Length: 313
Image (cartoon, rainbow, N blue to C red; front, top):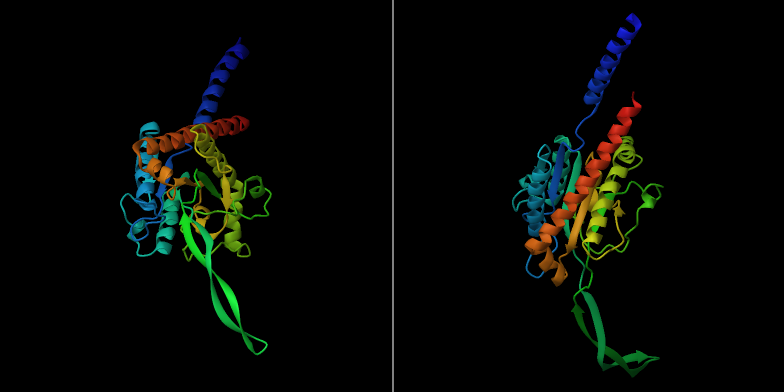
């Protein structure tokens, strides 16, 4: 009887200690989300026929933050800007980019979401409209030569659709190669910044790249993929899925110590998409898609954490 009694006492105590340990190990997977509206202030970004990337990205970002606050009330939202200024009210783009990453890192962000608009240059055309005759010297003689005269004009670029970017460590890295390339990228992402690329030969840079590979790459890819699949379900133009870049134009992603994505919500150079991303309907659909992706992403993280916690006992 003593053995049975001890067994019954020990069993609930074991459950209690396990549940306490589990509760201690469990933690919120999305405590802080950084929302980064692209450009701002003296840097309007890409321009449409009547709007700028800075204005549209800010409007969508503020709506996104409000939606996150509603869906995930326990999650803290940190904006890199909430008005039409360069983040941190800096005087130049380079300092503003550094501020974005520094703010994200110092805030202990669990996820970084940058909102941008894409842009594609007009298509240039030419046509021969006649010839002009000039005299040229040939073998000590002047002879006539016909020079074609051209008419030049441009037409709007038909590029449309969304693109979601993550940071690529190296284009030769096996993990990175699993994500599609986008060498014909036609938009702009702070590409005039003077910030330098990470140097793999620098021990500190190499360590940061290794940490990203081990902890953030797969999570960034997972979240970005959920966003792109959501846009597809909304019948947005598909441009190949998640893209990876490792040039200085996307520096802010590799400088943030957390899973990070940059979402190009549409081509502001397209009249149709400019109207869409400026409309309440378009912005609400964009925000709704990112929120749905966040829900799925959060569920995946929590499921993985529960599995890891169970393995610990």
